[in-house]
Length: 178
Length: 203
Image (tube, rainbow over all chains, first blue to last red; front, side):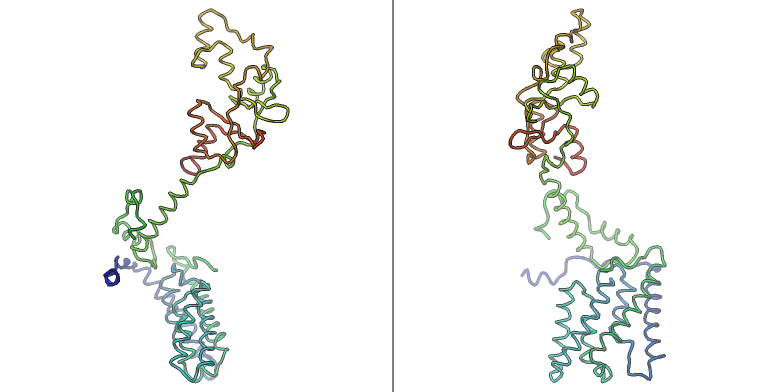
């Protein structure tokens, strides 16, 4: 019965943040996503390169919306995305004929490696998955995917996070670098 | 969570309400639940208690620059050294730096006519009752003649709790710290214990 009892939960949801926090979360994520999206659609539209992938939306939640979270720190943001990108591309290239297996292996391995390297960053799981499920354009990048869109994109978003999150008195970022 | 609780932790229990309110007062989104915080708090509290209850070795708190006197030193010289360094007692050492006794203000008071309580007011009372204040007999004596011997000593791995017991039972204020061969390494006074208790919790 202990097993089922655990499913009831033990505590309550944390309090709602104040309006200022909501405003700065909105502004930071607007600017961060605007930067990578503008590069993608405005400057690289006709090239084979990409600058934005879906997992950046998830990173924005953390680095602009939960700036104190260990999951949102630079070590996790950069390490989590880039390690997961390597794992995702490798999984696609080795197991591309069994896509369902490549998907599962890429995400599960990304989580394990992020844990082992203290770089756990939830959007990393999406970055690994996108390397497998992504468009022809993404598959064509090969391991370049690790540097762009992934590496370059997260560095731009990190820069915006450093600039915006340190403006309000009640916010600071990061808590730690490594 | 139950297994982390103990009597002491319960005594300082925080309510979920306290934690929730604190989380609301701290600006920004905290990526933990009130339950997480309570668990961290209880475990951390227990660890802090364990840390404070850790025995502290005498070697960590003793005074290493000891004012000591030779066993052959004239009493007047001993008095001068103690006065100069502002100490109320000092270990007496032989030629090999072995602690053979301790000399303190109490030993002087005894010589000056203090009775069983060995305190200064006894000497004053005696002086005023016209028998005369006689420090004179001390003049030809040496540290070895008037010291308390043998010295009550401890080794450097003794704990502060053990030293405290010795000080209380013997009604003394300091113990020399000596190595296996009895050689003087330092001294622990009541003051040292007090300082250490302020720094690291109760001895």
